[in-house]
Image (cartoon, rainbow, N blue to C red):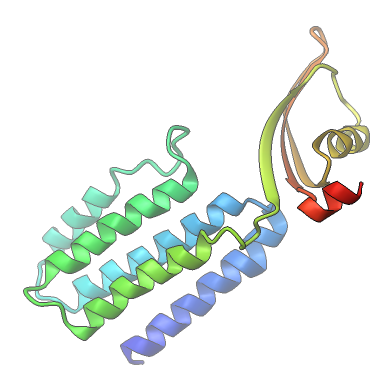
Length: 188
């Protein structure tokens, strides 16, 4: 299997995983760019390491540099993690070889194109995610969903109850919803 076939197989696999499995189930737009960026970045760096004469120790050390990024950080948004990773990957790709060959240039282009597509504003642009602290304790999920749908003004696609406080009569939820288009808001 040549390298172009390997790249094509990886792109098809990450597209199926991200657009066919993850997003339809979890509706989290910010992780789409993170998955695409991390996947393509790892592919590019791994292929470059595999085709170069660097030792395994140096390769592991370079991936150690990439692990500095905390993927579950609340301080850095998921799409920003992908951009940081892509920036590191591009630097590693450019710095590994003495010259920039066609494979390295193609892999660098692939990293950039993946982030362009994954973070494009038109890609799932109407999907939103918000943490909401309600002043009512909701124990009925259907009533909660209906309340959030009315409150958010869009179709709720996922609700995760983080906390229900029956003493203080509050509910903390993470809600994912589809915001109405501007024309729909004007018509309503």
